[in-house]
Structure formats: C-alpha cells, structure tokens
Amino acid sequence: MKKWMSMTLQQKLIALFCLTSAVILAVNIYTYAIISRMMGRVEDVYISNVNLNDLSEGLDDLQVAMSDYLRTKSSDAMEQYYRSEQDYRELLDTLNRQATDNEILLTEKNIYSLSQSYLELTSEIIQAKRGRNVEKYASLYGEASELYDEVNTFIYSLNNEQFKNNSVTYRALVESLRYMELITIIVLFLVLFGNASLIVMSTKMITEPLKLLAATADEVAKGNFEVAQLPVQQMDEVGIVTGAFNQMVTSIRNYIEQLRQTLERENQLKEREFLMQNHLKDAQLKYLQAQINPHFLFNTLNAGAQLAMMEDAEKTERFLLNVSEFFRYNVRKDDQPVTLGEEIRLVDNYVYILNVRFADEILFEKDVDESLNQVPVPGMILQPLVENAVNYGIRNIDWKGRIELTVCKKEAHISISVWDNGAGMTKERIAQVLSGEMADEVSSNSNGVGMQNVIKRLNLFFNDQAQMDIYSEGLNMGTEVVITIPYTGEEDCHVSGVVS
Image (tube, rainbow, N blue to C red):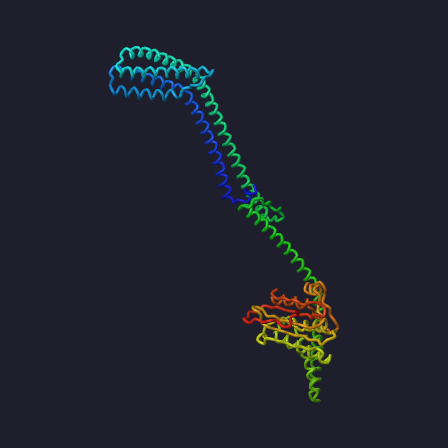
C-alpha cells in the first residue's frame, strides 16, 4: 500500500492494467491446462481398445504371412513373415505378464502365454517347410491354427470387456468435462467481477482526492479561506497538487493576518502622530543642544592646543590634538561607514592618550598592510577591542603590558588581530562573550561600545559574512581577538601574536 501511495498516476494505471491482465491470463492458462489434462484422460480411455485392435491385426498379419510362405515358399513371403513376427512380438510387450487377481490383467497374461506358444509353433512350421518336412509342418499348422483362433477369441473377449469399462469411464469423464465447463464459466465471471471491483476501487482512490480538492478550491474561490487542510495520503500528481494547494491557502491566510496587523499598526501610528508632532520641537531643540556641546568641546581643545603651541609646549599640544581628534571621531554619525585606515588612526590616538595618562606603561606595536587602508568598515570596531585589551588584559598585571595590532590579507578575507600579553581568559568566559550570554562590562574608562555591539555591527555591515574569534590558553596567558571580514585579495599572511 505504501508503494501504491508513492506511485504516479501513470504508474498506477499501468500497474492496474498489468494486474487485471495477469489475473485473466492466469485463469485462462489454468483452465486450459485442466481441460487439456481431461482431454488426455479421454484419449487414454480407448487407448487399450486401440492396442487390442492393433494386437488382433498383428496376429492376423502373422497368420497370413505364414500361410503365404507355406503356399509359395518365396523369399518375399519369408521376409514378410519375419517382419510380421517382429511387429507382433513388440505388441505383446505391452501386455501384462505378472500373476494378478485382476480379471483383465489375467486375460492379458493368458493372451501373452498363448501368443508365445503360437510364435513357437509358427517358427517350427517355417523351419519344417524350409526342410521340406511336409508331414511335420502340416500337422503343426493345424495346431497353430487352433491357437490362432483361441488367441483371437481371448483378444476379442478382452476387447469387449475393456470397451465396457472404458464406456463407463468415458461417461464419467464427459460428466466431469461438463462440470468443469460450468466451473470455468463461474470462475471467469468471478474474475471479471473481481477485476471490475478492483478497477472501481482504484479509480475511486484516484478520483476522490480530486473531487475533494475541487470542492475545497470552489470554497476558496468564494472567499472562504478558513477551510480545513486537505489530507495528503498519496504522493502522486494529485497529492503534490493538494499539498501545494494547502500551502497556498495557508500563505493567503497568513498574508491576510499580516495585512490586518499592519492596518492595526498604521491606525495606532496615526493616533500617536498627533502626540509626536507636539514633542517634535522639543526633540529638535535637544538635538541642536547635543550638537552645540561637542563643538564647544572641540573648539576649547583646539584653543588649548594653540595656546600650548604658542608657549612651546609640544607634548601638551600633541596631547590636546589627539584628544580633540578622538572625541571628534566618537561623535560622528554612527550610520556612516569609515575606512580601515581611519579606525587604525583612532587606535593610535587612543593609545597615545592612555600612555600620556599612565606614563608610557603600554607598549603598542602594529603590523598593518597599508594597501587595505581604504577598505570600508563600520565605525568603532578596533578601538573597543584595544580598550578591552587595556582594561581587562594588561591593566592590573605585574609585568610590562604589550598590545599588538595586525591587519593583513588572507586568501579572500582580511584578518584583523588584537593581541595582548595580559591576564588571559578561560574557555568558559570566551564562550560566554562570543555567545552573548553575559553582557559586556562597561567600566568608567570605557566609551560604552562593547564586544557584542562590535559583533552585531560587523554582521550587519557584511551581511553575516564577518567572524570574530577569541583565543587564550588560560589565565595570565594573554588573549587574542581575531576579526575576519570578506575581501578579494591575492596575498596571504600569518597573523602574528597568536597566543600559543
């Protein structure tokens, strides 16, 4: 049944035709075999009478051949005698020669014995004739004639008896043939009825899903999309169409529901639109205020840098310029992409400011492929990594802190590595940071941009083709954060500073 359900309509029709044809052919072959066997039995009924008639004719031929030789003594007559004798002996071999209580078989045994005696007499008669012993063959001829008559009498009697028995058997076989004819007709009608039932059931299995599909499609055409899902029991063409129809109705219902929800949301938005207009001026004012404060800060820092330059305080001037550039970069619009070179310059500014604050405690090294400086990236992706390396990596260690930044091409990607020789991370901590199970800690010295924020903006910018990995062998073993972004390049690199 499972195989039938998975067939196509063409395969089902072919299988149905082959099955009904095979059943009809098998019934006809069986009927023909039975009739042929019974006809063979009918032929066997009278085969015994035919054999006895052949035996009687062979005996007559032998008697005539012997008489012709006695009369003519020709070589042709002698050849005919020996031929007739050989034929008669072969016919005698078909008779019963064993002792039995069966009257017919006993008669066959007597015929065989008498015939052997008759053959011996005829042979002696022929030899006496050839030896010109007239008296001997004349006396023997009389005995042979008596045996001939006696054998003929037995053959005739046995033939009549066999005929009577065969007649009874023949009538029984004829009755059996008539009964078989009736049985055959009944079987043929049963086969025809069975085939018709099979065809009706099979076509019903094919057409019922079509009727149900047509009725449901008519309901959908009238606008009723709350119809029940049609059962898909067969994987033929009808089953495939039914499954597609169910999916179409489900999609239409979902679309209508989404459209209804959209209309409700639009109505809610229209209701809130009036409230939003009332607060628009306040929002614009706050926005202008937010712009004025950073510009005031930049102008103040630039003024301090100019004053330091006038007083020949080069270090103070450089410090104020780096601070000014750092804050100017941070307050730009977040939705604008930057270049990789700008991100690296921001890291330089950040590290310079930290070294001024902490008396050059941070050893910062970088190995950057400058051909990648114009690659567009989302803003603030490198400085948070360096900031985390400072705050959580080398801030509280007892040895000289070192941070390495490496940027290079690697096959069809760009590899960005930030490595530190600081406190390191456990595997559990790495898994939590990458999976977002624990929020990034924001210290007082942080700009508020965490690792998860960097990961999300990278995936958004590069359509989920960016990747971030964190490597560390454990506590006090250092940490490396590697960002991989797509790029078409020819030059490979080895990322230096990987913790090993």
